[in-house]
Structure formats: structure tokens, C-alpha cells
Amino acid sequence: MPQLSLDATDMRILVCLQRNGRLTNVELAEQVSLSPSPCLRRVRALEEAGIITGYHSSLSRVKLNLSMTVFVDLRLSHHNDQASDEFEQAVLKMPNVISCYLVSGAADYRLEVVVSNLQGYESLLRQLQSLPFVKDIHSNFVIRVVKTETPLPI
Image: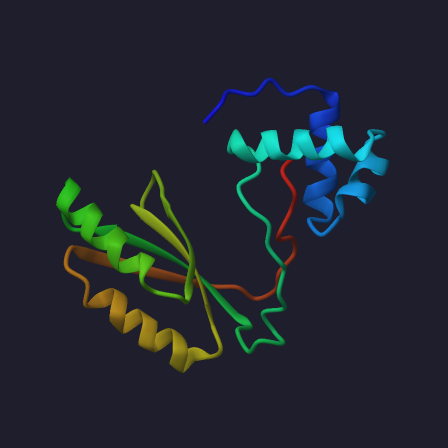
């Protein structure tokens, strides 16, 4: 990936695209005070440099019947490459686990899980419990979302 030095225009492009990834190139160019061709070249350079990693749509968890969010802290019984690799490969195959972080502190991993109800979480919990090397699991159920899907502070 090419190294890219970001200037003020690049930063404005990133801010605009974080707010609305569906902007057309013409709309984006207008918002950042560029003509369309140079704007498109800059966006492509940001993509090629790996700064823009993709575009996505934000979906309603409630309307898709995935309104229960659970943060799950896990500890592994062994702290070696094999245990970590097996756990991470298993988690990558679980569609209800929407994020997984290797963390410091009391837990080894923190998962963000979305399910439709307690029965859905119980099913996922049983999958997690059956994984080799999983020692402890602590679940924190979200009562209310205060803030989510926040753009990066650039």
C-alpha cells in the first residue's frame, strides 16, 4: 500500500464520507471545493492507501429483529498461539458476533453480540462454552444505546 501524506482537503473528504458514504463524486467535490476529477483521484488514492477501507450502510437492529446487544468478556484457559488462533477462527464464523477485540485487563477478548432474544443468546452462549480453551464468560446486556456508529474524530 502506498504511503499517503494527508492534507486539509483529504481530511475534508474523509469527514464528508464518514457523514455520508453515498455522496456522488460530484456532490463530494462540491462540498470540499474541488472539481470532480481531482476529487475522484484523491478518493482513489485514499482507498489505495488503505485509509478508506470500505463503504457500508447502517441498518436498524430493532427493525431487523436483532434488538438485544450483549457485550461478552471471555478468558481463555491457555495463553498461547494455538488457543488464540482456534478461538479467533471460531468467532469469525459466528454471524451474531459483530465485533471481537483482543483486550487487556480481566478478560482476554470482548465480543459484541446481537441477537433477537434471550433464547438466541443462550444458543450463542452454548457455542462459546463448547469452544476449546474458553475458561470464563461474563455477559453484559445493553439496556439502552446512548451512542454508536460515531465517525472517527479527525
